[in-house]
Length: 467
Image 1 (cartoon, rainbow, N blue to C red):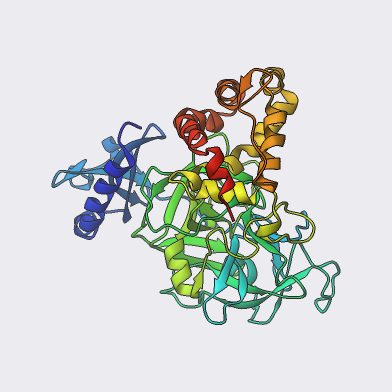
Image 2 (image 1 turned 30 degrees about the vertical axis):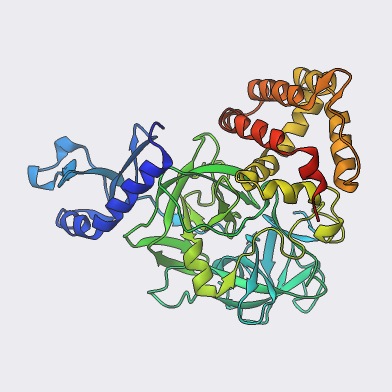
């Protein structure tokens, strides 16, 4: 994409201001279901052009339409992109146990017809308790009421009275019975000994940095769900001004004012059945949306081409919750299994806190958590990466950095056996960009300079001055 994000944001805001006016004109054409502000697609590929997307129930070839049925390519200088309304959509209703509790893992209620995903953890503004966030249809779509039990990953026996696996009790959710309610969200309060056994982190994504209200069509986003694990998508449209029917176990529910996300890689679906309740984050690990449905249906081999999500600003307002930023109690885990470890006890918490205080710190920490698993795999399995890591003394530099984080008085060596840490970073950037995934290579190309500049800024004096 050639346009900057700011240019896309400015154009998006301009079109959002005129969407209602343009929609009124488009509604005069037959077969129109609704509109949205989003990106233009050409041949199934997303461009950086922000347009008014008009959705039709049945997209027909131009030659089969009468002249008065053809939707104009522009209205008052604003470009129009005609799109087929997605076929029947389905709510993603989906096994490992995670203690402490963590986002991106499987969740189920006592009466549920299926399971979904723990999105993340939040603070209930009513009583300041810790709650988990997911979808209404995951936990409350089968007659469940506040106080009913919730388990992760499942109840260990068939008896509903059994507390095995119970981690929370239902608090409240969106009112699905209300035809004017267009949100799919619910919270459950941690209980049964799990009140402090959680981490404000999502599997394969890492710590969360609160929420962001600024979302631009064309932005890349990420999620970790129970079914498809860690995936990358592109914001296709930001607010759908059309009723979108979604089928759940309990029946069909209409939505609007949601967003549409399409896969960044068409060969890898962004979501599937079981991912419902996943939080969607931006490149800085700020929550932007809550996933609730897609068009994958029941077919395990069908790639979802459309994923639906509620804007997180709408969700937190509806549920009266706060998604905390990193730094709150239990927000920085050492690991995703075993007993919860307070932030003060994490060996690298000192260094991470310092990095987060820099301008690009949260972004770089988010990138580290996003790619850490792949990088470690490459170090162990790819010959070129392994050789570079060992030849340029990666293990030794890492050990010295860990020691520095534990002991502020420890003096980091300027070089090890003739190699500097900057040489290590440069070499690893080269081999990882060559042998890594497309996403990893892109992020290295985009942010390697930021990493180098941050490293230079982390002087001996700065590393020593920490809490």
